[in-house]
Amino acid sequence: MDSNDLINLIRSRRSVRSFVYQKIDNQTIREIVDCGRWAPSGQNRQPWKVCIVAHPTVKRMIAEQSKYGGIIEGAFLNLVIFYDSERGYDRTKDLLSIGAFIQNILLGAHAKGLGSLWIGEILENKEKVNEIFKLSPDKFELMGVITIGIADRSSEDKEEQEDRERRPLDEFIDWF
Image (cartoon, rainbow, N blue to C red; front, side, top):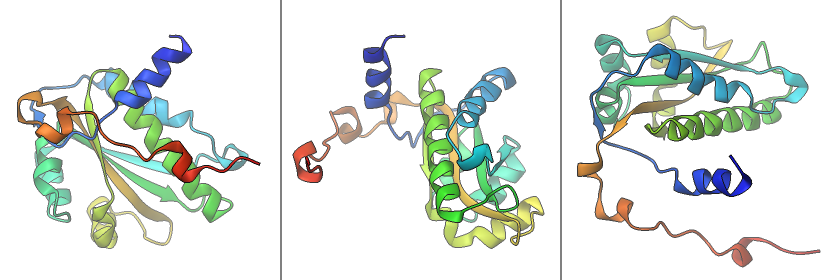
């Protein structure tokens, strides 16, 4: 892959909200999560924990905690991402690292031809999500859910199929 391939991969990634139910093998899932593992983190602490959820009952339990429950249940699997405060050393830097971790996973899924969506709205019910996984809220803090599956291209909104607008660079950069 040359630099243009990587740039095109980044620019072509989309948030996918509708999936065709089709199994994804465990090796592919591991490769996608492994992409996250290579995100930078302060002192290489890697302060994340991932619960991989494919079981319909557990997906439903998570879905009940979000207004995007249909997307959660429709995806083949969900990665429930937590901040492990015991592995961290500086909260602000750790949270930035988790953002990079999540982005790497989204790009890894896209590189494998899969659709994904980062759901942050579920943070409103983070305590209930911790209860589902029996994780102490004193140690683990929910950072979001990533849905992953085969994108249902037939149901994409017209807006999603068109080029997405981005702010012009000169609107948010300054040269010194």
